[in-house]
Amino acid sequence: MFNKLQQRWKVGPLGLLLVITTFALGGSLCGFLGKRAIQLLEIDIPAIRIGLYILIITILWPFCVLAISIPLGQFTFFKQYLQKMGKRLFNKKQHHVNAPVPLAIFASGAGSNAANIIAFSQKPENKAAFRVALVVTNKPAAGVVDIARNAGIPLLLIEKEPFFTGGTYVDHLKELGIEWIILAGFLWKVPAQLVAAFPSRIVNIHPALLPDFGGKGMYGHHVHQAVLESGKTESGITIHYVDELYDHGAVILQAKCPIVEGETVSSLAEKIHALEHRHFPNLINQLVQNAKS
Ligand code: GRF
Image (cartoon, rainbow, N blue to C red; front, side):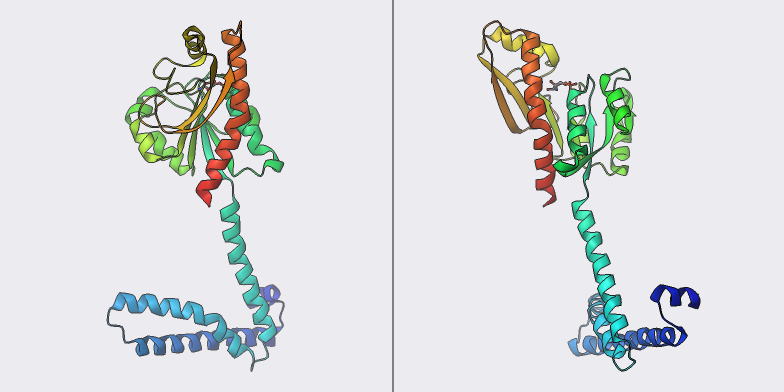
């Protein structure tokens, strides 16, 4: 053990003895001063006394150790030692703050939005505030399954019964540290339990300008068909928070596109997808970033 410490601190046997003595004397001095400070403060409640004592000795400790290190000729060692400790603590905090936030994408279809969000998160130049930690689907044959596999992202295939009745998936998502849920063409209604577990952290994209053309059964070409039949001259996308109702939560962003003469369901779907791909990843990034700071 002593050999290991000598190697780690790059000191000889005498140096090690002096370093250990400094730690011991510095610690004692710190404990003594802490006790005196508590006596002077005359606090009667034991819990507060203990809490304050811990706080005081934590603050005093580096100063006491440095003070003792001077007569023992160990000042340079301890100055560097404390600097290293400070850096380690500070860097850990920085790393935590800057670490990409894990999110899950829920999708039931082709998954072009999922692919686009994943691609955005993986481009270093985007410095994305999030990472796609999980893809969730209710359809084993959905295109999004291959997208997740090819991107090396874990896939969770969910079943109706536990999704709508139990908390199984909530626990699973929490265990994975998932902080946001992005619905990108997910066709099941989100159960209240999941909404409650991720308040204002579930976001959906809808291929029309809500509140029109939303609700049960309004997905994919059904939406575009309805928009064209309505005679509207524009359509667009709506990105919104998810609540217990279909296509109902607060709108975060809408973007529009014109409907031109001779527009078809597929030409409109193409325009809508282009809008989705342009806006969705950036918006997710902004939301996650804002929630962090
Ligand atoms: C998108 O148009 C989205 O608005 C809707 O479902 C579609 C999914 O498309 N919620 P993709 O599977 O991402 O290509």
